[in-house]
Amino acid sequence: MAIRERERSTVVMVTHDVEEAIYFSDRVVVMKPRPGRIAAIFDITSGRPLRRDDPHFVGTRREIAELLAKRR
Image (tube, rainbow, N blue to C red; front, side):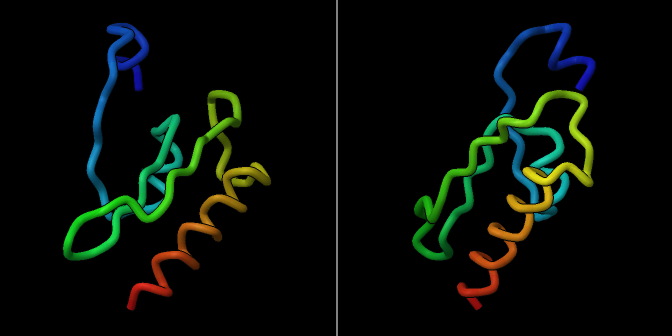
């Protein structure tokens, strides 16, 4: 986060950890499996530093988890 703030640059991060994606991102893009297409985009609008008990964080985590569970 410190490097991102200091450099003021765009960072693309790929992860399977939903909480990590929400915590470090301004936008989370959930991909569909084969072929890789966008399933949904979530804008993270809570201020920084983001708290894991923030209602927006909790709600976004739940929405993403539900979306991923449907793909199985």
